[in-house]
Length: 472
Image (cartoon, rainbow, N blue to C red; front, side, top):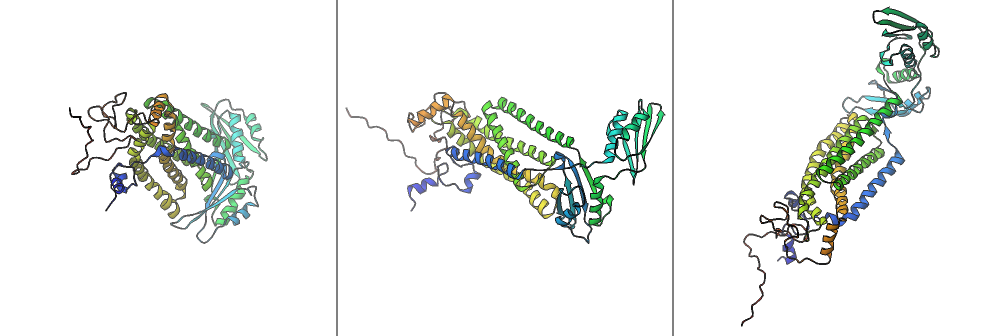
């Protein structure tokens, strides 16, 4: 035999322990706003821990951000590689402090050696290009270099007003260079050719030759990538500008679509997501590449989408706030209504990302995908969390300070209202949550803003006791 409390706990809509079916049918009655203090502590903790991780571990910025030079070569099938052996090779060059990483393809077992240095070596080919470009009034990209062994030929086509003596003097400013400069007049100016019979050796050539010998390959098999510090600064600057423009557009759109307080709450939630993702990258140590920036901007869009869904439901339920329901109770109602939608959307989005991260990167060895997949995984997870537990509580705390909502909460605290639902002071429009077809409050809504137990078919509902009339 079940007690009255047990029978009540089996009625949907009553504050009780939830079953999985309640999530599916959107019958949850969680009191989210009761735990705003705990949510604020979690918010501050995530920010502090992420910043500490950033300062303690620092970000592993890729070549595109910091600039430098990298070498990469695949080991021969009959050879093995170790980080210490590669470091011993680098001790004999100018790049003893370079970073060494080894990656192994899970499919064919090929080991790839990658050496990355933040120091840009003095490259005579680059120096000659810059000198010729400055002397001819062109850009280094217009100077064609044909290198064959120690012999190099640099040419520029259709140069207006080319001065052979000025070009000769500019080329000879490069150390250990003896050049022959030829200026041939053409219809649209002059063609300039600079021939150098003995090019000076570049410091990076020593690393190329050492890695080729160690891997059992040729120097042509060693791929070299050089990025100047100016390019790295430009990439970082453009990424920051894109992020700031994103915040401005976000604030304008949400202010027009909803209100300014919702816009600011959403921006704080998005910043929370960014700091969390950066902290994860600092802890894990994955390399930050332009693909990482793309992934971060992608997850910001997802986080914004989830926050807009929550705010749209709050905005829809706001007219039902009255003496019967405080703003916090209305937010609870809204979050319970969108909870299943948020969880389902996040789960569906996370499944392919987890497959990409676990199967693609760790099992199949597609290491180029791991930085992109990690950013998506961390961002999708924290984006769902922040929309429910950062943006909504912050908005609720901000709105409850407004005079009309503060007065409603004070009247509720003083017990100014009765337990029977009454017509609100300002009649809400039809179709609002908690409002029936006649424009009155739905009696199935209790005083907390959560639907009360519906009438059970076949059970006679007790009528309210009527006062007896006195006999005359």
